[in-house]
Length: 148
Image (tube, rainbow, N blue to C red; front, side):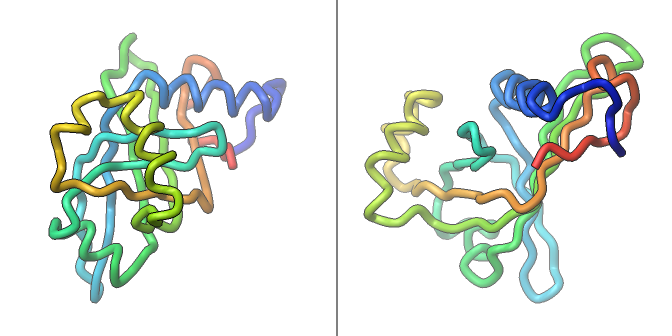
C-alpha cells in the first residue's frame, strides 16, 4: 500500500526511528521446508542491514549455513490503543567475514556492551531485499508501507 503526502525520506526516517527504539527481533529461517523462529538482539545501519550475535550451533545459524533466505519481524508494545507499529523484512543472512568482523563487531558492541561477555557468539549480517514498516499513527492506516 502506498502512503499519500508522505515522502520516501519521511518513511525511511520513521522506520529508522522505530528500529532505534527496539532491541529484539524475530528471525525466521528454514531448512528442508521446516521453518524456525528465534528471538535475537539486533543492531542496524542506515541502509537497513541488520546485525545479530548468536552461537553458530543454534538452529537458526545452522539453517542460515544451508539457506541464507530469512525473514524478520520487529514489534513491541502498541503504545496508544488502536495504533499498530511494526517492521518486516526479507533478505539474505551470512556470517560476517573475517575481513569485516572487527569493524562490524565494534558497531554491534556500541549498542550492546555485553557482547564482550559472549565469546561463544559470532556476528551475522542480514542484507535487505524488501523492507516494510507499519505505523498507523504516522501513515494514517494499519497497512505495511514499503521502505526499501
